[in-house]
Length: 282
Image (cartoon, rainbow, N blue to C red):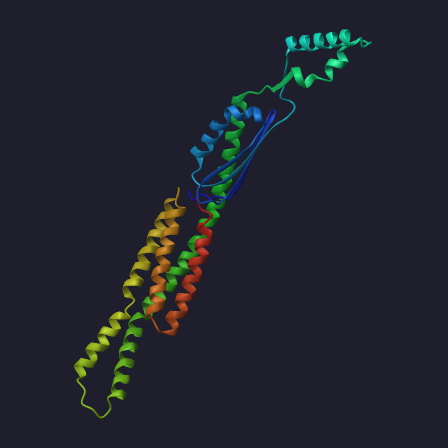
């Protein structure tokens, strides 16, 4: 299965909602935004992402609604100390009035701590559902990418076959042009015909692109096999595209034939289009 690195997944249950967005990235990059009281399970959530994905930038948002109960921890001993301190100051300075509960409530931040009560298992279950939803979308996107890439690699193979078909004619024309030019330059002089043909053969060998054509065909077959295999293949495909581009550049530098040169330009354009699509594959 070919998996895209672009996708979105979400899940919600009871008081918890998880949203995960992913885009292409060279490595695995996880940015998790969640309430601070979930810090104790953050590592386990990150591990779940690593177990399901190998590449991509993940933006994860976890929200816990007010339906989750809040626990209050009142520091009673501290309240007593504060009340006693107020009474002592009141007596010492002869301050009239009563120190009632309202005075203490205004200072609640000093002696009341709140904590969110939640079930870690519930949060992790919702997180897994969101990951599953994301994985399904990445698989759908990956299928679409694979279909488009197959079409483009078929086009590239067709262009390589056209160059292969014209290869013999190009070499023959090159030899003929070389011999004709030599005859013009040496007109009226004695010429060793076998020597000229030998030199023409050397030049033709330098311009021979049959090996590059064969290697391009081999790279295309390997590319198709890896694409059909699926899994974590993005970097492998990108490497093969680099090799394809190198072979096409070699053909372009060797050939002076207009038809071949035109096809190499089209091939490099197609390779770049494929590379743009491959950048989104895990």
